Image 1: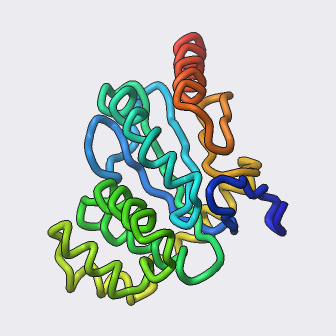
Image 2 (image 1 turned 180 degrees about the horizontal axis):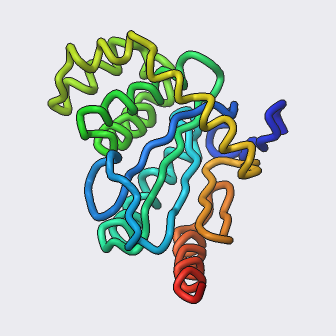
Length: 208
């Protein structure tokens, strides 16, 4: 347990977790995070994740695409990703970069690409330098000057405290964490564990 009460899950590389983050919506049958809640979507899937978490990187590549295709793209559920910042500046900068990409409607693309870049660079924290984050935005076709301005301004950091309170209120102990209705899955698990949890939550939401 760390001082914020989150247990570190040992995978390929140990990771450190601090309950700071930013909240973005990533669902409702669209490809980016800027969608709004809909009364016709019966369930919200909340995902707590962190760009410096090895297990979260695996979750991003192996689980999130399935959740999007099975539930968000079919309008069965709304997915809300809550990015947490670990160990100070590097992780926080990465989270803010994803939020800045979200301002240009490219949160999901940037989120996926940044996890891939961190993994491809052997989890090198230099991946989260301002220049590298801007270069990644440029490679994705974002407006680089606007992205850099957003990233360097720091004004997105005001949303960090919101996720800190949400994660504490939700009692998150281990990352990645998925919450859906009364279901909770913490730490990296096989895909079927997440799918079964969401399917059960969907059944319960329809009976409510």
